[in-house]
Image (cartoon, rainbow, N blue to C red; front, side):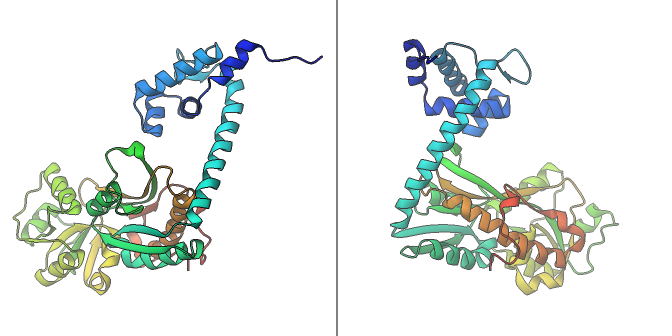
Amino acid sequence: MITTMSNTAAKAIGRLTLRGLRAFIALEETRSVAAAAQKLGVSKSNVSQQITALEQSVGTKLFDRDKRPILLTPAGQVLSLHAHRITATVSAAEASLAEINLRSLPILNTGIIDDLDASLTPALASFLQARLPQCFISAFSGRSDQITEKLISRDIDIAVTAIMPTDMHRFNILPLLREQFVLISAQGKYDPRSDWRKTLSEIPLAQYSENMPMGRLVSGHLKRIGFHVQRRFSFESTRSVIATVVQTGGWTLSTPLSILDAGALADRVDISPLPFAGLSRQIYLITRVDEIGALPDLMARECRGLLRDRLLPEFAKRAPRLTEALSLQGQVEDACEPGGAA
């Protein structure tokens, strides 16, 4: 016997929106309105409104919100299968259309933080040129705040930075790496077994300038732990900071990436774990939403491969007891096979 869809059901399905289905999937996966809102980059009330409108469209409850965590109703389970298929099809169509546009892209502007410029920029430029042979690749390097601001102002299209834009819903944010700050001291000047407050108070602190994000981060952390030392030096480059540590027999707080970027200077210092509460920063690859198709995901994969195959082993050689200070983030399993990033 052949059955036909009722007019009511047809009208209900006709009122389904892609935005509503994406809110449905986010709530299904996170089982929390707050978590779904965070995932989508919208407010909790926006998620609730989308789900309510969706339930009104289909004429039944899709979630049991009295349960914790929130669970799908039988009707919600039925819709789930179709919602995933619909959104996957739309995403594939969007990606295909974006790829067509990418092939005719005349110029692509990138920005990468100074600490990763020498390590990532040449390899990523080669990666992009292979995929976009008709495209002119422009690369800018600078501080995280400068790069993020350039992304917001549309001066660059792809950013590798430690600072996320405030209006996150407008951007595609892919985590690459988390790094723990470490203590850097002139050779033989600091013993991790000693009274760190006494030792570090007796040797000069070489600081990053508070005009830059790294300087503000370190300065704020020292204030939080209640460690106040005399201000003697302030610099805007890692090499100047570490050179001053070597020259004055002093110390500083910095990150594994900064140490690797310091070149031969890193051979003249000791690297130790922080003797007080930890401090970390995360590096992201960020693009504006829905502008360059699947390229951000491909680039993030390439970046993780480069970090895994080159920088992590290099830092492990310099600080074999601090390998956990660097960790890949995001889809690590998607990273390139060893040797594939060359």
